Image (cartoon, rainbow, N blue to C red; front, side, top):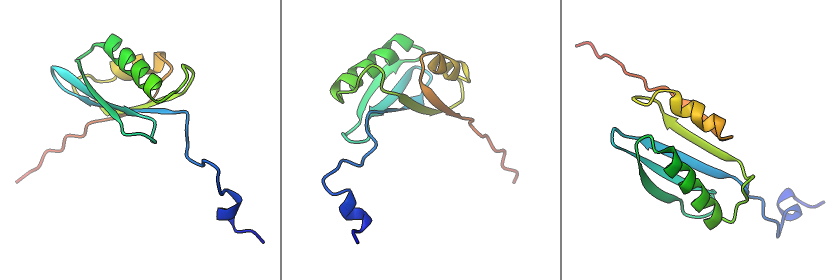
Length: 109
């Protein structure tokens, strides 16, 4: 009887054909990290709110990773100053987004 690892020998079993994107949202700039999970991620900085630059970064990384225009994009960021407008915009672009709410805890001494 073959073991499971021999059944997949020689086959690429990594999840491919997806683009992952993470935001670090700042007051003046957003830092983006984009990749397909197989190559080193690309990093770039865009002006805060520059959605055209975000779409350009996605297109550039899709080309670098040899992904088609129909490859799904998954993104995440921690909400804060930019709230949920960015989540709505990403969703409108067909990007699956996870927006985590920033939790501020007051510490009582």
